[in-house]
Amino acid sequence: MADHTTRLNDPSVTANAAWAARDLAHVWHPCTQMKDHDALVPMIPVASASGVWLTDFAGQRYLDAISSWWVNLFGHANPRINAAVRAQLDQVEHVILAGFTHPPVIELSEQLTALAPAGLSRCFYADNGSSAVEVAVKMSFHYWRNAGQGGKRRFITLSGSYHGETLGALAVGNVELYKDVYQPLLMDVITVPSPDAWGREAGESEADFARRQFAHMEAALVRHAHEAAAVIVEPLVQCAAGMRMYDPLYLRLLREACDRHGVHLIADEIAVGFGRTGTLFACEQAGIRPYFMCLSKGLTGGYLPLSVVLTTDAVYQAFYDEYTKLNAFLHSHSYTGNALACAAALATLAIFREDDVIARNRVTSAHMARQLQRLADHPHVGEVRQRGMIAAIEMVKDKPTREPFPWTERRGLAVYRHALTRGALLRPIGNVVYFMPPYVITPEEIDFLVEVAREGIEKAACA
Ligand SMILES: *Cc1c(COP(=O)(O)O)cnc(C)c1O
Image 1: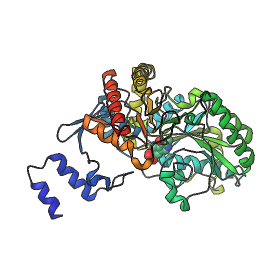
Image 2: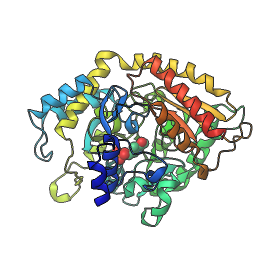
Image 3: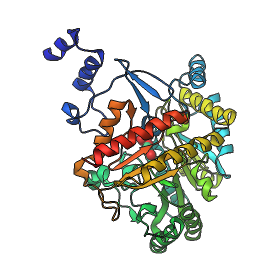
Image 4: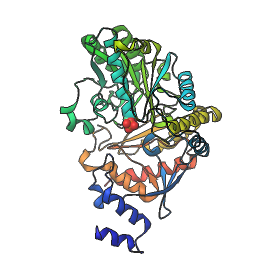
């Protein structure tokens, strides 16, 4: 470490480099091949953040086009959320949620159950998205067991789905890159081809394709309903698969079939909830109510880790019994329902109400759609797609056949590197460049992002 200390004492080394060096000496970063930081990509220490902008120690600004991994809704250092968290800090920062409670978690539960699809009247809290998925999976299985159907213990999932990284959540997901290595550790699930509209035939509508793909789900339900506890889906957008989108018709068919076959439906709205797809919850666009709805990410406006599973009173009642029957849901996390996080969530919901966010986002996303049309004709753009405040540009090697660039060429990484030089944080998923910006982004900032993306794609795809 002598080398490292020398660097720190050298006044010619910028503060950025010093923090980066100290970071790389000890921090093991998420979802990262750390060797990339040897020479390929810089480590960027953030000194401060405000609105859509992150600022490093040299004063360089980066537009946070991905909302810091899909969590931020109303900008960094949002004055209203800051004030709510500060005020809560002087009341109670955290308290055990078993046997004790606090106003923020009570008010949040009242508001969430009022906003969610009708019938979701019970809130069970955890502290991150994966844990919420674990809760929903365990609760579904346990519901059937309490109802005398312990044989219903399998889960049906879609290809390309993503539900988190803990072992249960990883098992019910289907992104090979994250899952393959750990396969020997995972429960066995039933995987059904996704309605992802990228897979449709030329001339086929997204709804027709959704209906066609649903035949696979129907067949799986016919075959496995006796042993299946639940179907788990990400409503409308499979984000981690590369912002792959599908028609709401699929959800309507799925809800109806789940009822018919006696299988739960778990809606993982961790990424798509809180206005991302144009409605407060994506399920609204299909007019459905799932049995379990998982929320996290935008729940606290991107401030603090918190997650919740909403479910029905019927599910709740299946666990409500004499203690000695041992039917209770004995699941907990230390930071369940953290008071500071709930205060941030309440401030976030207040902004939705006071600023008519869903209506304003319609204007913002329409502007994004218009600007993105400029990219649709690019010879290496296979498709530009959008749902509300999520937009994606699919880079392809060959436009007519939609042949993808081989993953080993890391074209997306080239876009990432280009964007950094221009002051934008774009973090493509494979060959998919996407925007999932904080809702406070301005039209000018959108124009800037589109220009950076265009240059990046030009550089990455034409090299
Ligand atoms: C991010 C995400 C998760 C996992 O949430 P974490 O807080 O990262 O554990 C689960 N499901 C979906 C759809 C997600 O996008």
